[in-house]
Image (cartoon, rainbow, N blue to C red):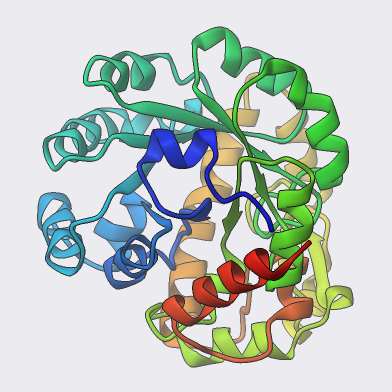
Length: 328
C-alpha cells in the first residue's frame, strides 16, 4: 500500500497528495473546485480566471467557495516579464489570503514577496523548478517545497526524468511534487514509490467533465500518443510541449533567425519574451475555448499515453487512490 499521508498533505491540509496544476487557459473555477472537493488541491490560475473565464477575481474565488469549502491553492507568476501584472498579482494574493487560501505555487522568478506575505499568515509556498540551480535559488528564498517539472510535462517542460529530478533535489529535505507524465493510476503509484510527497497533474484534468475547455481539445488529448507530443518555440519563444497538429508541422518548431537574435541579446530578450507570451495568451485562449482553428496549439504532456476518455475528476482521483491502496 502506498502511503498517502505526506508532508505536502499535512501542509496543504488535503486528503490526497494530488494537485491540479494551474493551467492557462484551462483552470476554470469548476475544475479547481472539483479537484479540491475530491480530496486533492485545485490551483487557481489568476490570468485564466480573470481574462479567460471573465470573473472579477474576488467573484471567481467566491464561485470556487460556492462549490467547495475545502482548501484550494493559487499560482503566482513572479518573472520579470510579468512586471505589468505585479500590482494585480499582489492584490490577488491579498484577496486569496482573505478568502482563506494558504497554499501558493510560484513560478519563473524570485518568490520573495510572495513568501513574505504568505508566511505572515501561516501559509506555505512551493516553487516550480526544472533543475537544481533554480531549486537552490528558491530554497535560499525560503520556499516550503518544490514542484519538480520533468521532461514529460506539458507546457514548459523540463529536461530531466522524474527519477533524475528526485535524486537531484532530495538533498534539500523539502517536500517534492512530481509534475509531468502522470495520466493514469499506474503512473501515480510509480511516482509515489519514488518517495515524492505528491503529484501534479495538468493534461489529465483537461480531459474531464468539469474542465470547460472545448471538446476538440479534450478529444485531441485522448487521441494523442506520446510520440505526438513535440516541443515548439513558436508559441512563447522557448520550448513548449504541445500536441502535434497539421499547423504545428506547417510552421515548424523553431523561431526565426531575427527572433533568435532578440532572445540572445540581454537588452531585448525580456521584451521579445513578453511579445511572444502575450501573443500566446491570445492564441491558446481562442483554441482551448472555441475549438479547432487554423492555428492549433494544444498544450499537453506525455501523460496522454494513459488518457483514454473524458471522465469526472472524482472518478479519476478515486481510481488513483484505489490503485495505491491495492499496491504492494
